[in-house]
Image 1: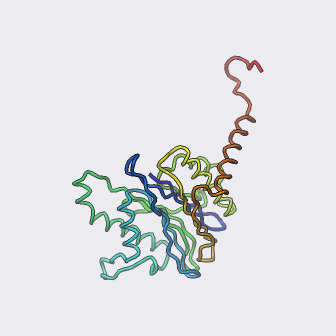
Image 2: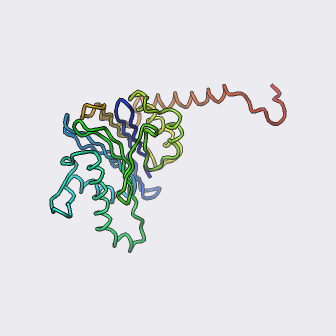
Image 3: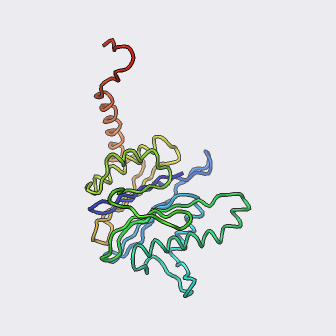
Length: 250
């Protein structure tokens, strides 16, 4: 299991991903799931993955080496894509190509082909985009009305994002809320855990502003977790008792 979130606000893009993978309770490992494709000032793209690790690694490797165009026979990478839309289509082609290669083995082992990706960034002066790419290779785009997308174990962090993030949210406030959603997911699901990778890209710059990994024991993330827990307890105490049942004795 994993949890990745992308938030696209007026100021720019935030991408966050955990690094935990597990094939059972006694087989837990750490693998990077947030990948960067950047030519500073020309293009910056971030790709976060969820699903079967061997499949997601195959897709990322194919994108780095190039996906063959069936019409021309040439190989295209994300560095040649002229627009974010065309780059998202390229990711879809890579997924379908990996599916074709691995289908027989997966079917023989009765395994499901499970992958999903968050893909965000900006190419040149083109619009900044954030997409969710599904295992069939199709994708949807983030909008101002719904300024975030999630993959993996998303249900625990979604209510926080729903209440706190809008398109007008300042970019580092968006990062803070995204980290709170990560913390909430980690508290409810042991399949999501540290280290946490994050990227911040300001709109119109075509370069990363922050690339950071949160390790266990980092003071800011520890403080954020403690403050959020304390704020929830204080909010609970401040809400009046429900007016149901017998009167309170207090």
